[in-house]
Image 1 (cartoon, rainbow, N blue to C red):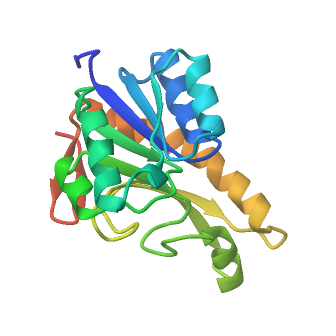
Image 2 (image 1 turned 60 degrees about the horizontal axis):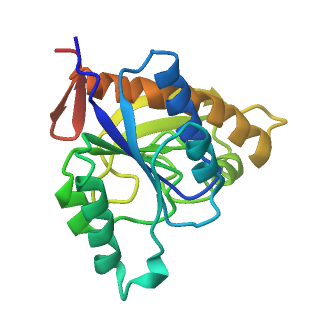
Length: 205
């Protein structure tokens, strides 16, 4: 039995559909966790509206208010630590996190990426997958380290690429899988069912 006090901070920049998937999973009691804080680097991000509709604590931290990335990330660290968060979930957070932030929450930051990593890290990955002619793409939940989209892989979902697919249709298919596997990965961590062994994430204890 896990504690109902497993606390999440979710970092967002945009629409927040993966945030919504996490909220829905919690509200259906599939995921025994609490979103303690939703943080955005974009003031008008729709994700903040989603969070507020569910009564969640939201925070906009403006990168332009800080002289450099290190100071901005220190402000992020302080706000998250104040909430006694167990896990940080990046959900469309469009900033690369630096060493100090990652070290402050070592092995406690996860991200969702719309490709089958290590293939197609970075941006515009659906278009790149189609242009490259691969037959399958998908989504990956992974731990965050200093290598962009390079941390140990927790879960993946495979999505076939059909001849008629374009960037928009492939993105939509992948997003549906993201909404399934992201809450699943969080649940596995909350229930202490994962073990890190080098680059591998071992399931089950």
